[in-house]
Image 1: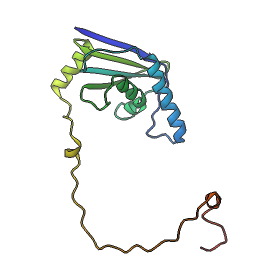
Image 2: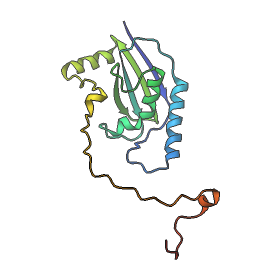
Image 3: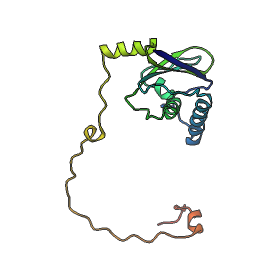
Image 4: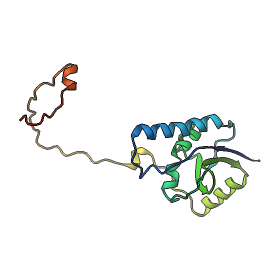
Length: 176
């Protein structure tokens, strides 16, 4: 049995790794992408092992190594949330592509004997992805060395009240 679900999300994606912008502007763009993906989600009740291909459609091209996946992170997060899975789950294989056209993202879910799922399985047979690493094994920490303890000097108490919050910490011409 093969199956595939396809739908298009009409949003513009940008590479956020090199972008200098206000954090609320980034938040609004990501929320808009997640909301658009949520509204257009057709539903899914298939088996857990699947391949999700996200195709970025845009007039320009991005570097496919790291910029392409970063530009579609919000959409990936929402697709994973709709599947009720973590986006780092080994049950889902994420594949990225790009093409030229009006800005949008094409989302394809494939499983079973579908051509996309079969192609990814064949690719994994040649060069399997690395196995997932548990957090305990990933970063073993060495114990800290105990050094001489320093005595803390008492600091002056912080001013309280709204007036203290409105007062600048540095006043020109005034020595501390």
